[in-house]
Length: 277
Image (cartoon, rainbow, N blue to C red; front, top):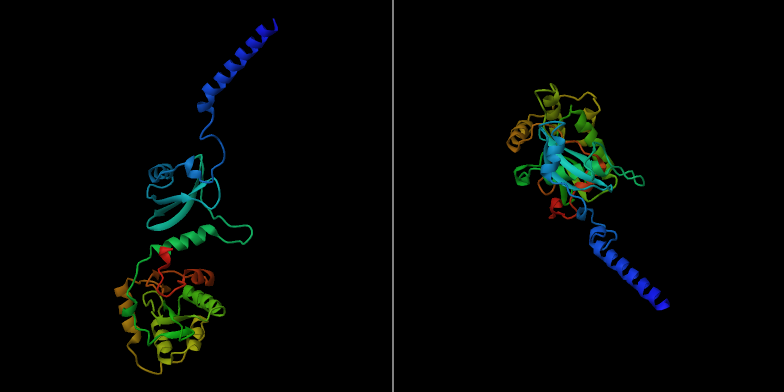
C-alpha cells in the first residue's frame, strides 16, 4: 500500500514538473533579470514620434530621438519654423513633457546644455581666414592661440550682456582671446554706426564699454572704412544679427551665450572639432 502511494506521489510530482516546464517559455522573458539598456524593451521611432506630436502643430518635424537623462523618458528633438526644440515622451507613449531636466545636486540644466550642444554641432562654418582682425578690440590674452571672433553692435542689449559674460569668463581663463568686430545694425539701431566708428578709431576696450553702458562718446577722431567693410563682410558670411560668435573651428553661433556655455563650447584643442566628440 505504501509503495502504491509513493508511486502515485511520484506521478503527481512528474505531472507538476512537466506542466511547469511547458508554461516556462510563456511566463519568462530572456530568463528574467534586469537590463540597463531600456531600448531592449522600449522603442520609439521618428515616424511614431512625428505621429504623436502632429496633434500639437503640423509644422513639427522630428529630427532625433534618444534616451533622456531621466529614466523612463525619450528625448525628442524637433523643429518648428526652423527653431530647434527638445521635449520628452514617456515610455508608455501617453504623455508629452515640454520643460527642462535639471540635476538636483549640481543644478545643471541638462536640457538646455544638450540643445546648445546640438545647435553648435549643426552650426554652419565660416572661413576664419576671410575675417580680418587687425581692427578688432582685444579682450583677453592677445597671445592666446584660442581665438574667438565676435561681431557686436554698441546699441545691442544682447551684445552688452555677452560682453559681461566674456568678462566673467576671462577672469577664469587666460588661454583664450576674444576679438571684437564692430557690426552696427543700422536699420534698427540708429546711432550704432556713429558709435562703431568712434570705437574703431579709438580702438580701446574702455570706449566699447562706455557705449554698452550708454555713456556719451566723443566724435570719431579719425576717418575709417573699417565699419563699412565689416558690414559687407557680415553680409557675405550670412550674419544678419548680433551678437554673432565665430569659434576657433569656424562654427558660427548667432546668439548670446553665458560664460558657462562659452567655456563648454570652446574646443579643448585648437584643432579639435568639438561636434565630433
